[in-house]
Length: 384
Ligand code: NAD
Image: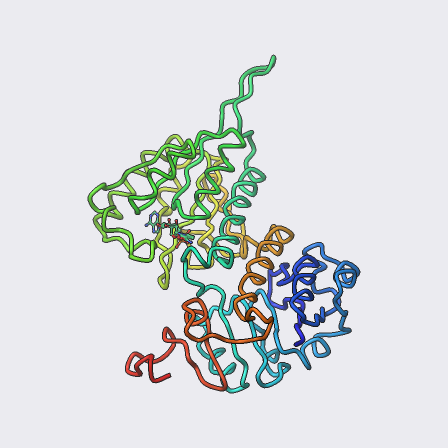
């Protein structure tokens, strides 16, 4: 079987779906690998390194995709890309199927068997394939580094002959994978860190990292988590009380990192324009949720906005791509772990539709949409 790795063509995307290291592992699985020239260049992986790992270098995308049985991508294909895949090819990537249903129809029509990696269930067996965690972790780290770059002051307390510099105070809103890494990073840089989250379980995790937890409503927190471990959308009363607590905390805060997401919904607004307007000049807010509608009123995807009172609101798009080398390395390892699922012990390609990870991620098969999450509710999943 032949694998293709192509250059990512979406805006703000510097990552690549395979590294020379994972290419070696694919070759050990008995696969032939074709890498489009320059596919890894923006993530620091040059053609020569892929070649040394045993891949062939294709002169362009069409040459890499033309006879590929397996196509590995970070982001979903751009217009015209699906047409370059042969019928029966397997496509694996962050395909964002629920937001892009027309793409899923196009995969089915083109006879492409597509797997969406963001649908990997968060079960223990799938941890090595958990792209959401690997990328959110790096996004959390990078958000603090970006904040430090925008901040006109130092993070740690410093006692010098010329005087003492106060430690920066950082507030992390949303203590999931990205938020916990942001806490750890800000602490390592010497900041005094506090954090808040709607889920009760977050308190212990935040405190174990040496940060202070801001509790909004202990009772409400008990029912704020879904069975899958995600947050629920909170009611108006909770949101009002959260704003009151946070407004109080903002008086002592230099930097806010917002990471709060609710699956399938627009991100909740956690900082209103009034709250930002009350912050001290020179403060920095990073809105990691900016692409999901934003946690901060006034944040803009792709821009850094300076408010009238001198607060910088950072709204970078695709945060993992800003740390493309490590993000690609972890993503490629996640993909490799997923690929192993598609090969049996005799190294034969086999899609085991009874496997719960396969079931959750497989979007289309043999020209039909098969994912239960994408089928109209009226059609029983079993009928697929
Ligand atoms: P996420 O990206 O969906 O959301 C980020 C954080 O924002 C979450 O902690 C969420 O509770 C919080 N949030 C949402 N609304 C909020 C609001 N109004 N105010 C404050 N905070 C708000 O979450 P995630 O990082 O993907 O993690 C979700 C859960 O999944 C966590 O419990 C995490 O520990 C768990 N998880 C489990 C596994 C596994 O078992 N393999 C892997 C990764 C994550």
